[in-house]
Length: 410
Image 1 (cartoon, rainbow, N blue to C red):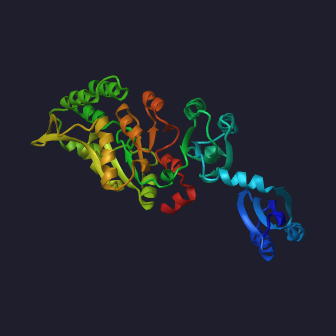
Image 2 (spheres, one colour; image 1 turned 45 degrees about the horizontal axis):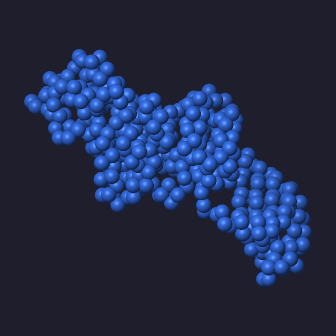
């Protein structure tokens, strides 16, 4: 086919969707042996938007457009034809596969104001939105019918940000001001092939600090809680605070640990998240500055693959106020993440870490994707991604899972 006899035509079809539309139109293209260079379709509330970029011999283009026009009329659709030059097409081809980003908006509900603010930042950076898809199910008209609902949309964006760090900071500022979560990720091969996800335990997988629960039973709750809060804010060294808190537990009966474990307040979304991650083949780990007793309880209940935490020394059925082995602090969490990735033959770029405290920052920065979850201000300020509006299953949307897949895993 000589270039002077080649025509490129962009066909845009819109209207009420019903079965057989794409089949009927593509059958006409097939009859004239037209080549399809690009195709995309979306359906919003039964309204179809279909785009097809074709190449054909100039001698056939008139008949193709005439038949498509008649067929669209029969089907009650609107159709528009736009010529595309070869130079325009070659420029488009040259941009394919380069500098693509995924931006995820997440919250109990999403508003036009939030989407307008995010898309304004995208435009300021000179980037273009290629596609938008909803990852969550359809929302009811009456929001009070679903007070714990979730709303998530994913934007596929092309271009090179003028300043990616400034863009990230703007997004995080918007998320704080407008009460929604946002994730900015480069759309690389590694993003599509995550394989290992490591979680902090206390105030991440569970809605409490276990050491605080133990301290209340030991009658030293206020002292331990004050030390815990200072440590999580990064005001004092974690190892020092850990030894001080454990020492205050001396004499506590071992049976208390079992009672606390059986009544742990598990974070919203943990069970749903774990079902999906296991079905999708992810390896999962608990890397905690808390205690192995409680990590192993969660491992047995939800199917985590690894647990690394601190071991309390118990003699004659009572805590001694000492621990066994090395303390799992922030540095050790990052080391363990690398170690598990090595054992599982996973590139570090394919790993995810989720946590809330200052001692989680090393593993959040080490992982390919670090997510601050309902985190302390210092942690959120130093993390590129955060979730603060919904439960832990929000992680699934940052990984690109749709509710349709999630429902199949339940």
